[in-house]
Amino acid sequence: MERQEAVERLRRLEGREIHELAQEYNITIYNREGRINKGWAGHVFERYLELPMNSAQSPNFGSWELKSIPIKTLRNGNLEFKETMAVTMIDPVNVMQKEFEDSHLLSKLRKAVVIGRTVGNAVDDPSYIYRVATLDLDNHLYESVREDYNLVRDALISANGDINILSGRMGRFIQPRTKGAGHGSISRAFYARKLFLRQFFNLK
Image (cartoon, rainbow, N blue to C red; front, side):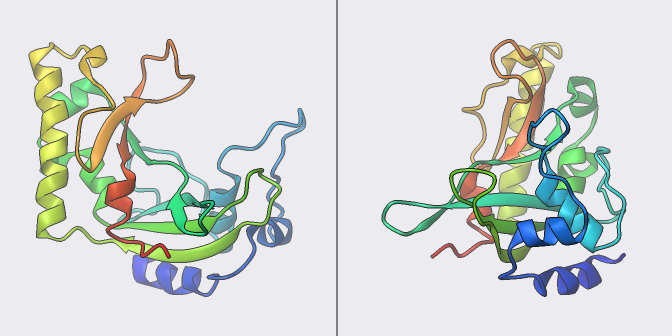
C-alpha cells in the first residue's frame, strides 16, 4: 500500500476509540498470562490497513514507516506527549559505517506516518485517535536530525564502537537511549524527542 493511500484511510479513523477497533479486528490487549501485549494499538492500525505486522529495521511497508505515539492530558487540560518515540535500534558497526543519507534512522523517519492517540492512566482507559501526521523532513529538520546522527556516529567512532559512550542527553531532536530492560541493558536505540514530535502535531 502506498503511503498517501494509507494516510487517507487512517485519517478516517480520527476521533475513533481504539479499544472498539481492537475488538473489531480481534487484537488482544492482554496475553494469556495477563500481561499487556506491547504494541497492541499499532497492531490495530496494521490490521485495519490489511498489512502484515513487521518489526524489521527497514521501513515496515516498503517506502514508509508506521508509528503510534500516546498523548496524555495534563492537569491544566493541555495535551502533551506521554513519551518519546522509538525510531530504530542502534547497531554500532552499522552506524559507524553508514553516512546519515544511507542510515536506518533516515529511512525510518523520512516518510514516516505517525498516529497520535490520547490515553488515560491505564491501558483500559478510553483511547482516541487524535491525529494522523506525516513526518516530512524539511531542510531545517533534515539538517538538525543529520547533526544528531553524526554526533552519535562520531562518538561511536572515537570510542571504537563502545555503545556505552552514548547518552540520552545527546541530540537536540533525536537521542540515543537505552532500549529494553533499563538498568543493566546495553541495547541502545534512536528516539525522537517530544520537541521533534511537536513539529508535526499541534497539541491543544
